[in-house]
Image 1 (cartoon, rainbow, N blue to C red):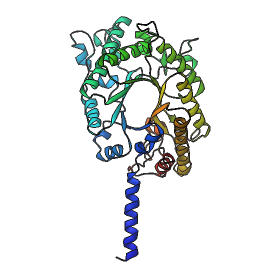
Image 2 (image 1 turned 90 degrees about the horizontal axis):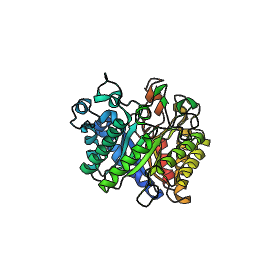
Image 3 (image 1 turned 120 degrees about the horizontal axis):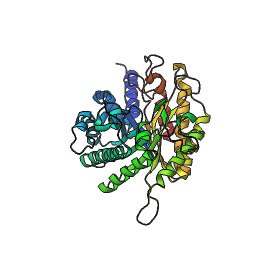
Length: 395
């Protein structure tokens, strides 16, 4: 081999090693926020994906495995001697154990969410054929469920689950989703179906859930933050309602000194940015300032902020350069928050991490994450957008 060819090969080798040495979470750390990734149980068995996560992320969010409809064991509940919920932690434990072994922290997602929730949970004897139970029963069940779950993970994996999304998506969108005159816009229906927590546990179900979670954390003496998580959290009307909800939660309970107990520590902004299922509304520069303004609004309420489920949507392959520039500018906004306003943003977790170019148009994955919105392509190769973000974080 000629000398120039050997030199070129060495240069390529070293440049490749340098690229691999760039780690998103290490680059983000000086700017005050961790980097997180979503992981499914299927991905948990993909070693290439796990290697990517270990390289670039210091936190993970199991997408479904810590949710109530996954953890709850109906037959165990029906046989429960004290009538309180019974859980099966097998899949969740596998994932949290892997995180612990690799020095990665876990976002607990999510304790209370009306969507897809098991109808039988709200029925007498956990039996789908029986009537719905009364509010006192559902409150007792939910208190037990939240306490058991938080306690299980903290005692089995101390310090690994460092925060919980206590309640998810409790703020309605349109005026038909919530009661007239309610400044919290507390969701009573979702897509025409009733919010079973609101209907059978009561209008205070959000505050009660946070109270149960706070009591569990304090009983453990654990360092666990409690978040409210929702989508469209950077749009003005939704943000105003979320602020009202946070205020109601943090004024719900009184401590021994007669002062309000802070039950909610922060806001999780889901971070799906752009049109749902369409390029229209994607990569719109005005969204960048809206996101920064919303973070500052929550900070002004004394709330921490995390971007919890970020997907910068892009449905057209030939917009790769525009997508990279938008993504880099988004991180510039995140970075500027740390320098201008202390440290309101402490985590950015990306759910739209990988491209899905073969995903059929109109599916949930296509609409939610978009086919070309990832930092990596479908084969987990680095994309131009990843390099743009890394270069931004180096500034």
